[in-house]
Length: 496
Image (tube, rainbow, N blue to C red; front, side, top):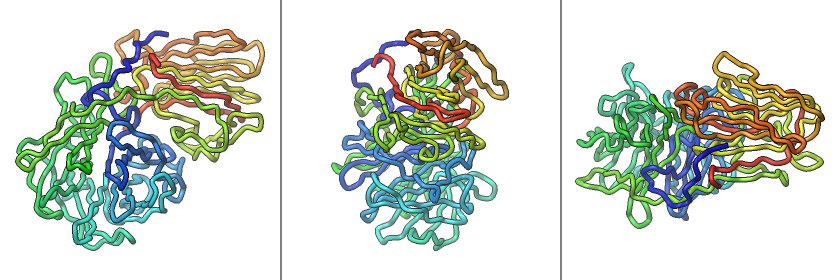
């Protein structure tokens, strides 16, 4: 197993995410005591993680906004569908989160609220007749509320807006076009922000691939008309050799000292052309100053501490760690404490995706393993991009297999017999590439004290550039045909 050592020193915010791994579409607000951050989650449950920070660079996961089927029915959507980009705001003593479920609802957006972001959020208020994605919510000084989103106008992509009653979702005006950006594709991710006497409309353009960019426009009224910044795009890495690419989908926040910062998504591609990113779109931080009434972005304004991504879970007690997610059924429907200790995972043959206990891959190189007892069934340690792109080690009482799924092709790469049943350890690691890809994924089994290598596979096939979509790699354990017992799961960043 080979991979570079992890540098423990603090790093520049220009190259180091503040929230690594599959955490796209960041939205930030300042609450009464700290900063808060939210991300889109697509088909995964629970939905929309909520983070807290007192300094903008060190973040703690404190909960999720969508934890019940009445908010987002888990297991009802395929890969890259479900919950799209949220906006998180603190207003009038409450936290507000607005987002889109692109499969459910009535052709509009949904809004949930809470007094405590560590606790439960309300059932959603539906905002109808606002078809599109990436909704934003803002209030003027008179209490007027505006929902702004990425939609269409006369058949073309445009940023749309409507006045609403946030308590009921009722529309108080006809939807109107605000801006179509500078002419690039996919004007989206709008955020309406007030600075001084002016209103600013921050958007993403160019698509969420290599052309991704951040542009901004200004008006003296939240309803517009908006005029674009002469320096647009104010942030983009397109056509540059920068190690961080796809920069876009930004949000702004003002500190209590009157300084400003920006969060935005980006990826860290590796390997030869076209470059492959595997852990999804991550959240980065930049400083912002204002010159001649326009924001100027300083990507290296902050120092980001070395990430603390390693963890161990022995599943003690009834409460699941907040890092665990599933691409289908809710965790409580197929996991429970085992009577003899650890966790029991039951088969969940949900469609279109199987449920499994998963966590995001957060580092360029890492090792994850699970101590499992297949009992009468088959346990699987999976590295998963989507339902058509994954690698897995499967273990039963009689055999261990390495299985690969790439598109329509699924094959058993390695198969070995077991001398006896009982507990064993399954291990996966992202290691240095032996081809032109971003990495290799290597797999082992430790059975009866003997470690056996099962093989290593090209990491390119579990990248967004191959699989497509908006998410990133996760790893975790699945029960295939009968309940399995999990005694311990660990994740270690390279060099940790």
